[in-house]
Structure formats: structure tokens, C-alpha cells
Amino acid sequence: MSLTSKGFPLFLTFDLDAETMWTARDPSYASRPILMSQGAYGWKVGTGRVLELLARYGVTSTFFVPGLVIDQRPELMEQILKAGHEIAHHSYSHAWILSLTPEQEREEMEKGIEAIQRVTGRKPRGWRSPAAEISAVTMPMLVEYGFDYSSNFFDDDSPYLHTVEGKKTDIVELPFRWVLDDAPFFQYSIVLPGRTMQAPSAVAEVWKSEFDTLYAEGRMMMVGMHPQLIGQPSRLKALEALIEHALNHPNVWIGRCDEIVDDMRPKLKAAGL
Image 1 (spheres, rainbow, N blue to C red):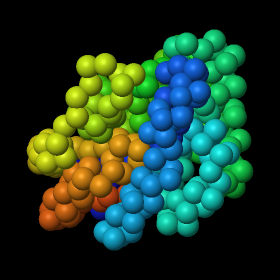
Image 2: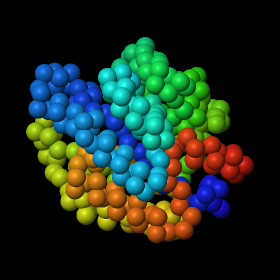
Image 3: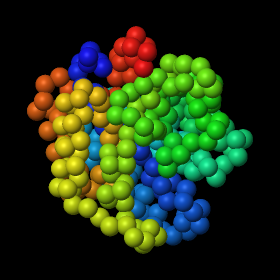
Image 4: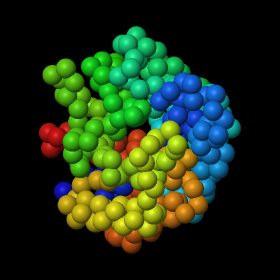
């Protein structure tokens, strides 16, 4: 059974963290201009390069953006929206949730929602946590604020509907795994000892192999990337290789999270997933 009306769902998503990728680790990093410039690459160069690539292949995607970055870069948000992409929730300051009180987490949630509403005119439909962590209050808040989907969990290769506090919800989980994230392969800095960089060809090989198995099994594929990483010249070729590989297969839908979720939810509900 196909999960969608247009075939195998391939999600190419981008966490536009910019400088918050670093300040979330340590606020004192804000005083280190060279380190901050690694994050700035994401909005100055990387996002534009990603947008050009997606346009060349005629595909749309979802950008998970911290509210702080939205407030700082409204012109860039306009470019993303004009190109037909979705902007989804990625906290406000990218603060790691497990370091927050429930009150602070709610403030992050509400400020992020407000930032997205200002640039899109509507509430965000999807949410991805910073640093792949959630707290005991996170999922109930997603229900409370009316989110349609989450892309956070690592427990499956297929989408499913969340059960929160014992009740089945309409929130679709779009799971992923670290092997489908560019950061473990490409994130390198002097403040992250032990990190090594991988060749883009190796990443392309891994992602194409993942695609082949998931496609054959009729599941889905969620790739999480960061413009400051994947948007660098050689690294973008890993993404392009995956796009070309996927488009060489019949019945593949590369699209926005919100649109694909709307299409697949009825089948998930009918199947009791």
C-alpha cells in the first residue's frame, strides 16, 4: 500500500539554525566572531545555494527555522516562502529543551509560533526539536497548540499517528535517524573535539543506499540538513546526487511536510497506525 496518492514520500528538510546552532551550546560563543561566522554562512550563502538547487529540480521542501532567526532575517524568509517552501517551528532560540523549565519551554514555543505567524500569516503546522530532545511537557504542548505533525523520533522508518497522554491524536510523526542527518558527517569546529569530516561522495552513497531500501519496502525517507553544512559547494553535491537518484525511480513525491502529511493522514487513520 502506498502511503500517499503520489507514491513514495521523500522529505528534504532544512534546519536553518544559523548562529543559534552554536549559541545554544554555549551563550558565550556569541562573543567569538569566527565561530559565529560558521553559523552566518547558513543565511549568507548556504540557504541561497540550497534554494537554487531545489528550484532547478522543481521540488519544494520544509525549512525548520528558530523564531530568532526568522526575526533577524525577514528578507530571507520571504525568499523561502516565495519559492514555495514551508516554514515550520524549530523553537525560538534553539535552546536545548532538557535545560529548560516547563515555563521556559512554553515561552520558546509561543515566541516561535508568533515569529512564524508574522512572516507567513498562519500558525506553523510542524515542529522539530533542537538537538533531538523533548521533555515530559513537549508532546502535550503540540496537542494544545494544534500542530499537525512532528519530525523528531527515531523509532520507525514509516510515519505514524502519535498517542499523547493515552489518547490517539491526528499528529503525524515523520521519523528520521542520525544517518539521515548531515551534521554527523559534516559538522566540524574547534569547539567540537573528536569530530571528523566525511567526503560528500560517502554521504551520497549512504543516502542513496538508504533510499533504495526504504523505497523497496514502501516506507518514507526523512532527510534533515542544515544550510550552513549542506549548503557548502562540495557538500551540496551529496544532496543533488540523492535528488537525481530518487527522480530516476517512478512514483516518488519530493515535497513539503505539510502537504504530504495531509495526503497520508487518512490512510494512517484508516490503517490504525
